[in-house]
Amino acid sequence: MGWGDIKFPALLGAVHGIQLLLLGLYLGIIIGEVVGIGTLLARGFGARQTLIPYGPSLAVGGLIALYAGSVITDWASRTL
Image (cartoon, rainbow, N blue to C red; front, side, top):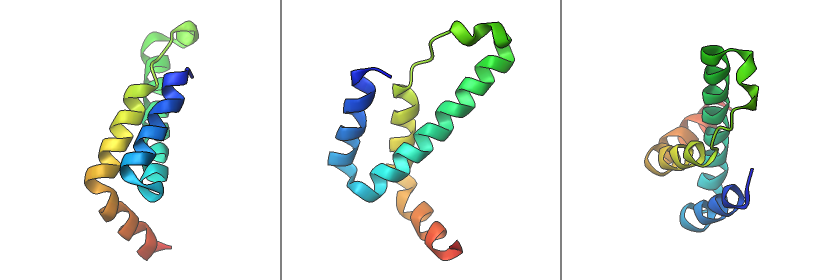
């Protein structure tokens, strides 16, 4: 992770607030894992030297939190 990957969640927190920031980070981490595992499976395990940008995963997680965050948090609060 670079400094941009640290500053970007700070921006998300300033725009969304703490509840949607945590949801966006969680979704961004899951999306990043899926992309990383997909890259390993597609290119073979010799591709571990390939750098995968983390910012787009955080951006997609933030967008999902922005547009569907209330639905996801309401669902999570009902199921727990």
